[in-house]
Image 1 (cartoon, rainbow, N blue to C red):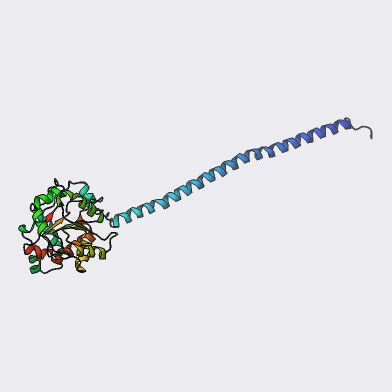
Image 2 (image 1 turned 180 degrees about the vertical axis):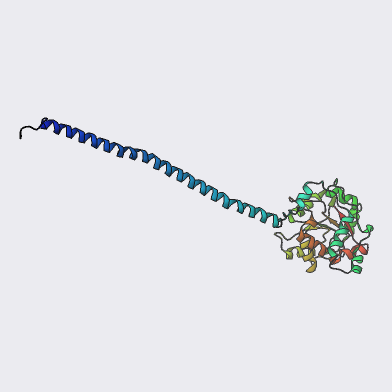
Amino acid sequence: MGDDLGDEWWAHEGKSDASEAEEETQEKQPTEKPSTQTQPEKRKRVTENTLKAKKKKKNDQKECIIPQKKETEDEKSTKPKKKRKKKKKTITDVLSSSEPKPGCSADLQNLVTQYFSDKRSVIEQEELKLLDSCFLSSNDLTHTLSSYLKQVCPKWAKIQKQHTEMSSVVLLIVCSSALRTIELIKQLTAFKGGAKAIKLFAKHIKIEEQVKLLQKGVTHIGVGTPGRINALIEKEGLNLKALRYMVLDWNWRDQKLRRMVDIPEVKLDFMKLLESGVLNGCKEDKVKIGLF
C-alpha cells in the first residue's frame, strides 16, 4: 500500500507548481489592470479640477473688475470736468502773426490815460490830455532817424546856434536800451551837423561823469533811456528848460518784438519822465513830441 500512490508524485508536484503559478498570474492580472486604468483617470480628474479652478478664478476676476469699471465711469460722470487753462498770448505771439503798424499821437494819448486811470481823479485825467498841436508828425516806417528829424525840425541849424544853456538839451531822444542808444547816435550823423550829442544811459557810465559832461559845455542832443534821464533830472544834472523836441523811439522792436512801452520797467520810467515836466511843457506849447 505504501507503494500504490497512483500517478507519479513528481508529476503532481510539477502540476501543482504550474497551477499555482497560473493562479498567481491570474490573481495578479486583475489587480494590475485596475492600477493601470486608475492612473489616467486620476490625471484626468486633476486636470479637470485645475481647469475648473482656473475658470473660477477668471470668472471671479471678471466679476471683481466689472463693478470697478462701473464705479470709475460713474465717478467720471459725476466729477466736474477741469477746464484747460488757456495759455496767455505774449506780445511776441501777437506781433509775430501781425504786421507792425506805425505809432501815432492817439497811441501815446491812450497809453497815458490808461496808466493814470487808477492814479488820478477824473479832473486830473482831463488835465493830462494833450492837444494835436503838441505832437510832431509820426514816422510812417519809411524814414531813417536823420530823414525823420530833417522833416520835423527843418530849422535845426538855426535852433542849434541859438542854444547856449548848460546842463540842458534842445532835442531829447528816448529809447529802451544802451545798445539802441549807440545805434541811434550813429544814425544822427547826417542830421546833427556840428551839434554835440551825449549818451544818457546807465550801462558802464557813472552818473557823476554824465553830470560833469553836461556842465562842461553846451550839449544840443541827448539820447538815452528814461531811467537814466530821470536820475539826472533828480540830481539836477539835467534840466528841461531848453527842451523843444522830444522824439520817442516808438516803432523799434527788440528780439522779442517788444516796443519801448511794452517793457514794464521802461514804461514805468517813461511815465515818470512825462510827469517830471514834459507834459507841462507840451501844454505851454514849449515842447513837441514825435513818434519815430
